[in-house]
Amino acid sequence: MAERNTALPLNGIPALGGIPRQTAHEQVLEQLRGAILGGALAPGTPLVLSELSTQLGVSRTPIREAIRDLAGEGLVDFDSYRSSMVHAPSLAEAQEVYGLRLVLEPLAVRRAIDRISDPQIERARRVHETMLQTSDLGAWVQLNRDFHAILLEPADSPRLLAMITSLRNAASIQVSLSIRAEVSQLDESNREHALILDAYDKRDADLAVDLTGRHLRSTLDVIEAYERTAGPAPSTEQ
Image (cartoon, rainbow, N blue to C red):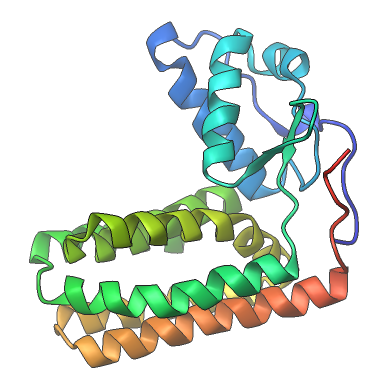
């Protein structure tokens, strides 16, 4: 990447004061994920518990739990001193992730399309409609994950879907970065989602597989163009 933040941009995250204890973890998780995917917390940004606690208005415990969950999603890294920071992805990582997705997702599409129900397609359609209306990039990237998860869920292959979910999570930061670098990609992705939905609605497996592959490759093309322009991210190793 071209530039990395070295301090937490506290003004970029709304306060979360007054959260009931039983929901604090979930809301902090959603807020931090949105801040990372929306760009308020850039790759390489240190996640300092004391600063986050002050800004969000909650104790350190739900923040620590949320950071651990985000690390499991590939959005946060820990250094050798167990300090956390926003993951800084690389071009090689994107190529590996999308190479695997291009192999695995067509398998899931073929399994899912014969099993998917009309209510499931309608759920995906409602998510797609929300994506068309949102101007919040972080929210859009999270909805994008939901959209694809709904369509592949009927594949009924827990191991296959777990691998795809892990890869999709790993790609989220770069999807966000690439869209901020090439805003037209947002409209293009929305258009591609509409075509994929139509193929599912028609139960056309060959078309759905083809469109899914094109969708993944076009996203990778934008990521590659962005990464080559921005340059490699600095190492997070201390």
